[in-house]
Image 1 (cartoon, rainbow, N blue to C red):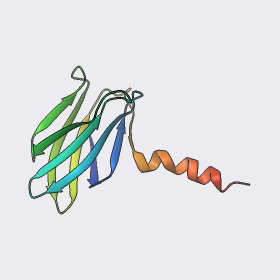
Image 2: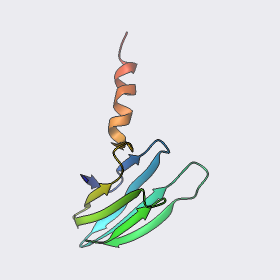
Image 3: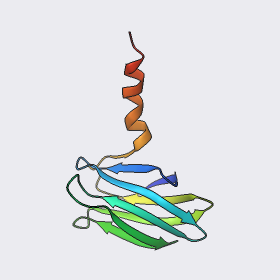
Image 4: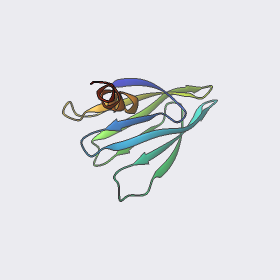
Length: 102
């Protein structure tokens, strides 16, 4: 299981299909997640409490809310070893660095 601490507004990108999981709100023991499964699919919004789980796809990807507090969510993500999981800000970083190379 990969454990990530995410703030409201931060995105996690899962798999080659580029599933985006966005923390929309996190307070007390609840979190609202926006899940985009593809460019043609509308965003699904899921509200979960600490300890609750949601499954994306055919039981390939499981997201567990470990805890929430003050605008942050601690998420556990379980997926097959061949499914990559990235914090969105790390995917954007190499492009920004390339902009400064002359």
